[in-house]
Length: 151
Image (cartoon, rainbow, N blue to C red; front, top):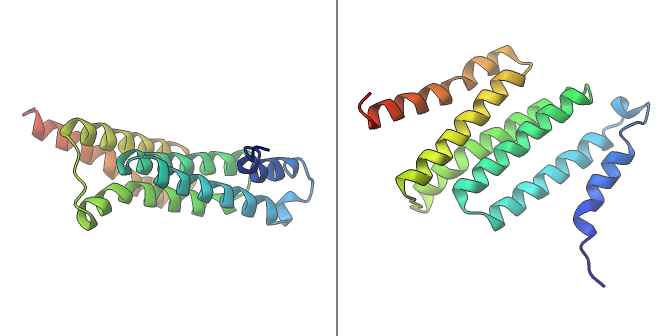
C-alpha cells in the first residue's frame, strides 16, 4: 500500500481546527501549521538546488504571514519572518560554507526572486520596523543591476 497520504496528515489536522471557536486560545493550530511549514522547508532543502530552496523557504514564510493574517493570529508573524530570513541567507551561506557557485543568470534570477519576496513582506507585514528593514534587498538588487549594466 502506498504511503502518499502521510505528507497531507498535518495539513488535514490543521484544516479541521480552522473553524473551531476556541482556536485562538489553543496553540495546536499554530503548532501544526509551523511543523508542516518546517517539513516543507526541509523537503525543499533536500529536493531543490540551494538557490531555489532559499526562494521556496522564503515563499513558505510569506504563506505563513498571509495565513496568520487570514486567521487573525499574531503568533504566525514571527515564524514567517524567521522563514523569510532563513530563505534569504540560505544561498549566501552555501556560497561561503560550501563554495556553491552558479551562473550569473541563476544568480540574477535568485536574487530578483528574493527581492520580490522581500517586497511582498514589506507590503503585507504588520510590524512597521520590519517593513523599513525589508525594503533594503529590492533597493540593493536594483543597485546591483544598475552597476552590472552600466546604467
